[in-house]
Image (cartoon, rainbow, N blue to C red; front, side):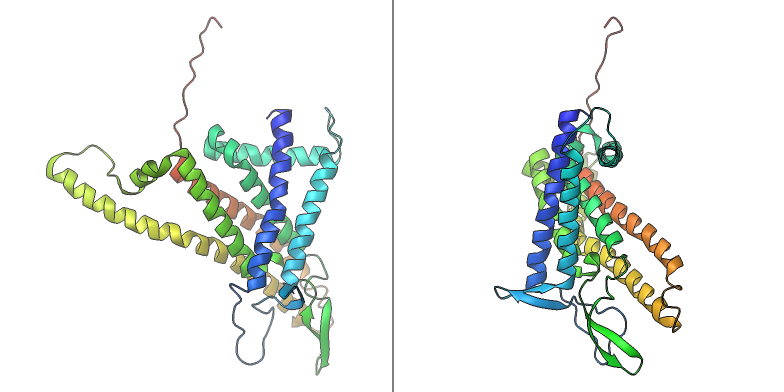
Length: 310
């Protein structure tokens, strides 16, 4: 990867972090997917983010605070690492280039050079943002600092100041919708409307006569099912990420409250597991979206014949 391409790619995909944060904030402000609270006494992490206040009539939730902190932190780190580029990188620049090159190589092996050059900014951003948000959510204080009240079993936090960003369905759904919009643009740009319809409904293989007519009907029905599958992709992507992170945070909270006096010790082994879960979920989200893109936008790589005399 050339220096000019790498530098431009770094600035592009980290700039998208703010766009992702802004999109998730707007969805969170509208409470588009605020899950209903269970009747009676709530146990564990609430399903919905807690409103901390309002700005111009729009609610600010504790998960939005973590989203902004992660986005601003990533952009600040990217600017710091690329502010003074060196031919022999060291420190932050070395780590940054290793991370970008590793993600680029992984995606190039899946998408090919043509597609990865067009879509790398999104997939790299979404992977690094989700990974950072998952790991920041494990920092002590997230979910345990805030406002509460004294009960029969001591002080209980009822309005935490921070909540795991991806433990809010609004954020995961916002990222899924953003991918769906980008997928439509990439598909139309790569293969056009005719190509999309051909990929969905055109019969595959060589047939003739009555069998070809039958294949037209079969593939048309399969295309209708594929459209339903495509429409459900944002839902499946958002719930998969949200469910795993939400369940992990509930497990850590349950371990902390299992034995009085040992709340600081019992969750420690599970923290290491959640570090792995955070990495795996970021990879799964990126790889699934990359494969969805490849299925519609794939190109056959042109073979380059090099003369033996060159």
